[in-house]
Length: 374
Image (cartoon, rainbow, N blue to C red; front, side):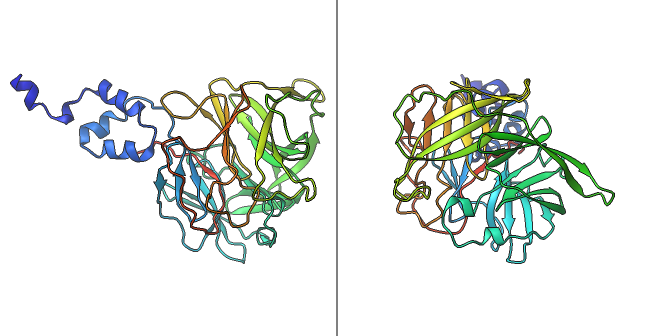
């Protein structure tokens, strides 16, 4: 009994500490635990842990942890406007001259991109089609800082190998890298881009091939959909599959296709690209298994869900980023969690989390996926 009373917290067995860590999916909680003492810090790095909870950027430059609703404040460039993200890298436009950069939110590593024509980022329209921009990289930028980065927006596809960038005029709904190759979606048509390098060493797109036909049938949603819908499409790589996620937003037919603040997401359809046939086919997907999808115009990603993460499996997490006017009291707007099994949409945050206060700002809603390299 005397020896038990004299034991310190630093003597906690590593396997017990690991069990505690597995139930702490929040980055802030893991950092606090590791800061207790050196043994805890070293023992916490022995076993792989579930992924950290995703974050959502808010308009005022803060971050919202999903689904626990914790507000995180991280130093970011004061004069830069966040226009998108890829994993835990943020894309900033610094001025009207087109100076742009990528910054790792945690290591603060920065990759500069040559000046871009960003007139498409400065439009006055508050609707989604004037401000669409999406970044993708074939490899994690931490391990491959010289990797290609694809940036789509304003009817242009930009292939960047920082600091070099080249443009291609082309309308796309979304882009993603899949098995090391760049794919683009226009309506239901999937295209693949062949990328090589010119004599000057600049990356360039040598050819574009359409490789899919239209879906052979539609999903029958569990819940009835409005007669008039705005359709948004996302490309997401999920466990070795390339998925097209179609989001249906109920609209007022008198002002179609522009959404209003009052419009709400009604449902989703998910299709997998079968590239084994010519042309490729879109196959209906009715469940995601243990995965969850986080979709958005500026970042989409699959996430291994489970009891330890707090993220629900077989669900689609979404946020309103198609309407860029000043939100009302609720900065989350048309955000939520869509259950693939029953078609029910729940709030984005857990029942115990408070909805963040609207403080305005000029940031854009985008997903951030923290890494546990601490």
